[in-house]
Image 1 (cartoon, rainbow, N blue to C red):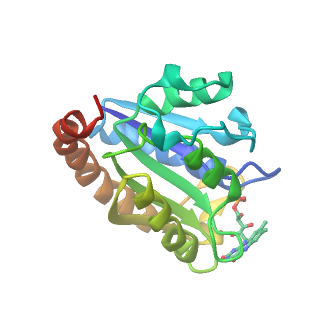
Image 2: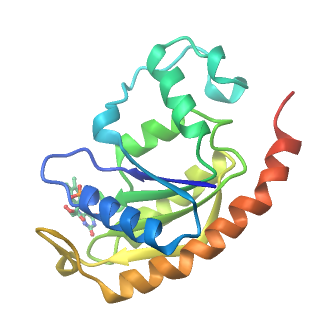
Length: 191
Ligand SMILES: Cc1cc2nc3c(=O)[nH]c(=O)nc-3n(C[C@H](O)[C@H](O)[C@H](O)COP(=O)(O)O)c2cc1C
């Protein structure tokens, strides 16, 4: 089973990439998922321009028109579960993350996700704002997250005992949901 970790900040000097790397390393060592992939939205540089047909009317990658939507669709289709590493911007989550989610639909559907953030209150407000968006694309958000404070994200990486404990605590249930939802996905996928 494959875990995809999405880094939702694309700004210069972002902290979220370090957080994504830290989480990815920890998840690889922890072993609940046999594949762990870090996806950096900065590398993907997804345009805001959307397809004429909304993604919820698509049932396969080759139905998209733009090459970048096809590539993004193929990439996200590979995941069995997601970690969204989102910064908290003005009490919300990041705009690149919203765009990355909105470009697709069936690719996300019936898969579990958890969130990781940092901020004044551990990014809790941004994560809370993200939940209804995940639900709208049929992602199943699980009630586990990792909330980091600024002093836990150093220049050369994350140092957080409580963050590590929370990360270790969420991976087994996330993997269990991913496995349990596999037949659900098969059953509910439009034919
Ligand atoms: C546009 C903007 C808005 C922000 N708003 C908040 C906020 O509402 N709450 C908060 O705790 N931190 C806020 N911050 C501080 C971020 O938590 C901090 O910059 C963090 O490093 C952002 O993640 P990033 O470095 O991965 O982009 C904001 C930062 C930016 C750039």
